[in-house]
Amino acid sequence: MCRVFGVSRTGFHNWERRAPSDRALQDAWLTEKIKQIHEQSRGLYGSPRIHAELQLEHDVRVGEKRVARLMKAAGITGVRPRKRFKTTIRIPGITPATDLVERDFNPSGPNVLWVADITYLRTGEGWLYLAAVQDTYSRLIVGWSMATHMRATLVVDALKMALARRRPGPGLIHHSDLGGQYVSLAFGKAARDAGIAVSMGSRGDALDKELVSYCTSWC
Image (cartoon, rainbow, N blue to C red; front, side, top):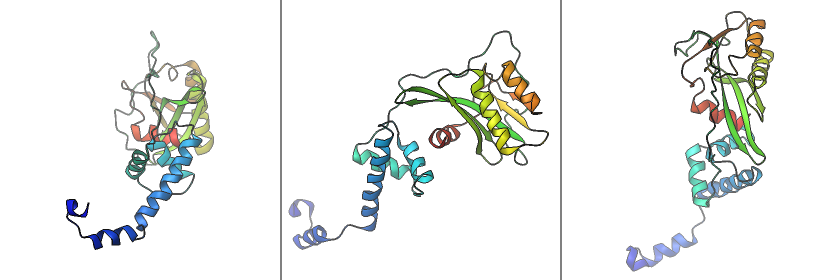
């Protein structure tokens, strides 16, 4: 082997006896933590969710790319959805709210512009739907709701949580896509009662991938 790889026997034996580096020891410790979290999720979590779990629940500061590398080396993979559901379901004959944002997601302060959307998670007991509300100024999730259905109560409950936690003043805009849950009478009444201006865009991109990843792993 030494002859093939062009190294000296002394150098090889020194390397063989050398103690593992700090980086190698850290990788070994991280791999064990990753295995524990993966087992606790019943094999569902991939690198984004395991990365978030390490940071939020275990206070471990590590990059997602490193987590992905260690998972690949250990042969650990998450479960990906085999089927994509359509969460933006429009209701014919109902006129949606005007787009008050026009893709300007840079408000002057907190509680000026909230964006909302629905995503879905695969669990060991079936699909779970998640509605989230984000303050675009701080990029914090200010409200969320989870259920096994996509009825209007899903988004109403998320809005109510956001209102209870942030208690916004006048002038707040709530922006979403044109999904039937957001044009429902129940959601419209909840927004009016809170003095919120409802805005809807023609594209279902109120929440970006970063938000969905953060929300699904944290909430």
